[in-house]
Length: 196
Image 1 (cartoon, rainbow, N blue to C red):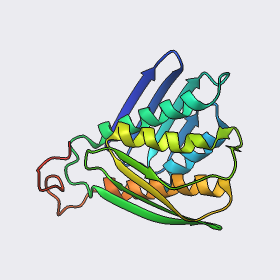
Image 2 (cartoon, helix red, strand yellow):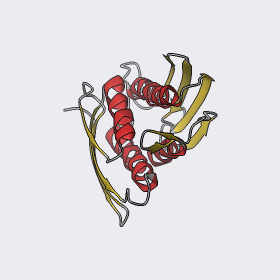
Image 3 (tube, rainbow, N blue to C red):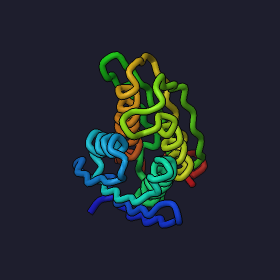
């Protein structure tokens, strides 16, 4: 059946439903109302081999901020719920992902202590209908909602589209590694005995 979660988050600014299966095949159905953001979430699902459904109705008449940030909060919650007690997972994951002139590093720890760090600086204010400053806000929201330590380092870059896409794909590959099960780990990978 897989490690799955469904999260519903409704506020005056957004109505969100997310279904996530960490043990999927990369199937996705994404609708946020922000085209480039949809494209990024599709890449995340496909390259991480996660089954992902995202349906968002947000206050896009204001801007994309609430839609993107709240989706990050809900996705982080879904990751955390799908992992359950985290028994048997590798816990750590990393990826160095090339995309044309861009080379992106992503590393993460599912140890239960949230932290976000990134040195990625976009040279444009928008990519399609997505404000580039919202890429950072999305990953910050995911990391804190999932209780995940998440870092990005841009080793080289230039094109904003490539940079954002490399971030989402590198995150997908790193997360896929971290949630992977290792038969040698019979409990949780911690000397404390917990990954809370």
